[in-house]
Image (cartoon, rainbow, N blue to C red):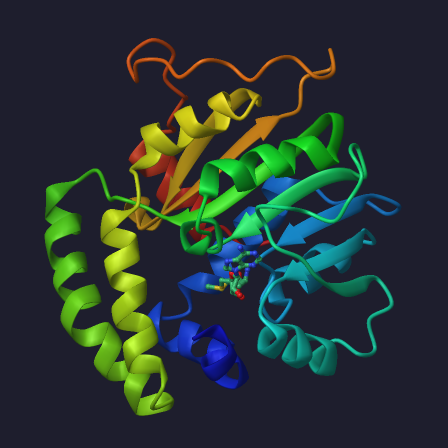
Length: 253
Ligand SMILES: C[S@@+](CC[C@H](N)C(=O)[O-])C[C@H]1O[C@@H](n2cnc3c(N)ncnc32)[C@H](O)[C@@H]1O
């Protein structure tokens, strides 16, 4: 499916999100905090748009994906960028040694992975102690006033507009919407990250919670047993206020 939409993937995203995807990428890049010399894993990197944003800050980025179509398109687009390296990888079985990266991130990809909890555990495994794992993913707007019209748009308008740009995309974006509706809300994803062994897990909502940005850190005392699943109420992540979240999403670097 991703192979078929890869040539116009970024254009479709720009149109469907009315340009908000660019602001979400800026917020995600800030959350990863790339610096020159860092090695960063951008998992499910697709055509490498998020990878190039990280590399622009001087970090070396491994853009990993399991779609040959996405990788080919990414290699073509970023051929002149020596800091972005495209690598075939399955998120649930990463072909990297423990502690290979200073940080790992995944944008709009975790929801598509067959076993997302395993992918989170793999991200934790390949990141050095003290390094961060950042997840940008579609989520659940907490306010019903936003949630209801957004769901109508996503169910009915989104596949039609996408289909007008690329005939394969209508089906892909119908799937996209179903997968978003089935995806856990902010608190549950935060709990998954804690279960994967990350600490200081927190999230903030972007554009009213249409997207949520989660981050956690690999503990310094290496290789603790992943935490046992616990009730959502025992140690919640720290959502920022809706106002603060919208302000951040709309901020310009
Ligand atoms: C919606 S795209 C996101 C691309 C990119 N991260 C972005 O922000 O534009 C989702 C990507 O996840 C990749 N993907 C899904 N499951 C995967 C897996 N198990 N391992 C690696 N990549 C996977 C797909 O091939 C696709 O390129």
